[in-house]
Length: 243
Image (cartoon, rainbow, N blue to C red; front, top):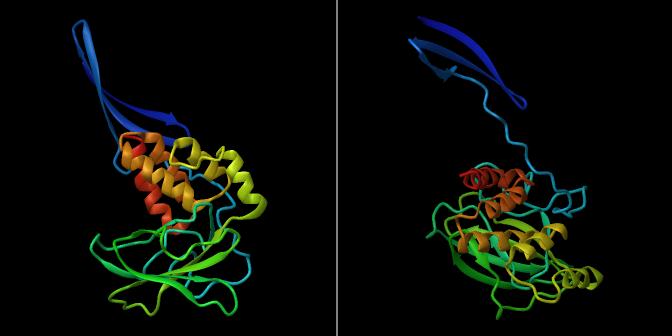
């Protein structure tokens, strides 16, 4: 005999309705089930790691709307409004239409009377500050800006970066045992110390060297979860982590 049954399968926070057809053939039987159209899909819980953005709560930097960006249609910087770095050659990232798109990268000291200290043309959406460029100083805060070559949105996108110094830098040195690198253990130190630029760069390096390692994608996704402008990147990384 052939019968129709309806069952509800429960998983954490999700209720999925399925329709099943049961077939009986003498001494054997099997059941075929299909999920009902429009059934609710599980919603991923985003990681919550406070402390990556150290900008004072009052006021916003120029050309920033809800993060390091210029708003709808504009270029978006993949960074906090004010984030920290341990390395003196940080890697900067932003949205890019393609790898051949040209941008102007500028870096200035964030203090009265200090002007621009570095400018260069770059291609794509990633730039590592050169070791032979004017040296970044521990304890100093800088403003970095990116402007597309064909700018149609009225000025650069900007964010601030603090190079940690003093006791905070010594604490990072101790945690790294005086040997900073690009290992999973180093990435954990950078996350624990809320060093955005170092943590993202380290996970990105680990992924580049071993794209099949899901934990690296998961670690970077948890970083990207922290800001609205990087959450699409987090979703992409988490999808790769689960495959």
